[in-house]
Amino acid sequence: MSKIVVSVVLTLVLIIGINKLSDVVYYVEKPEKSAYIVTGTSSETSVKTVSSESEGLQPGDIKTLLALGSVENGMKVFKKCAACHSIAKDGKNKIGPALWGVIGRKTGSLSDYKYSKALLAYGKEWSFEEMNGFLIKPKDWIKGTKMAYAGLKKEDERASVILYLNSMSDNPLPTP
Image (cartoon, rainbow, N blue to C red; front, side, top):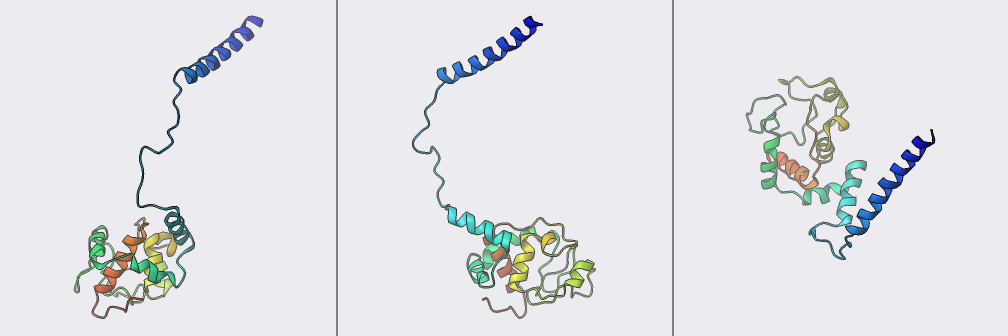
């Protein structure tokens, strides 16, 4: 029994010793400066992004959000949505409803599309704020929606898509 205990202790001492010896032999000093400098980011931006996504935008923040986007960029980002939605004036419904004139329209109001019960019961109007909240993560904004899209996490992409959707209407709403 004593031989087993001695061999286990000796094995542990040997492993720990080799580990410490390799740390001494292969010692590398930490550089004073980072080898890769990431430009264009700040901790304030990251904190603001996380807080606005987790807490939802305050009513005055929609102006700030929409200032980040552009209709041209929204046209590019909308290609992610085009697999399920049409945006043409007389566009047909696809997997999702046609989105011509969606900003300012009541939720679940197209008569020729079968909406989820949750979206029909929601009963609000697609305002800039509502669309922003929905595009962050549809399943969290309206529980029970059929929309299986994960959402647009980047604020500039959401703002651009909202501006683009607003522009694709006979009567676009004035931008706040």
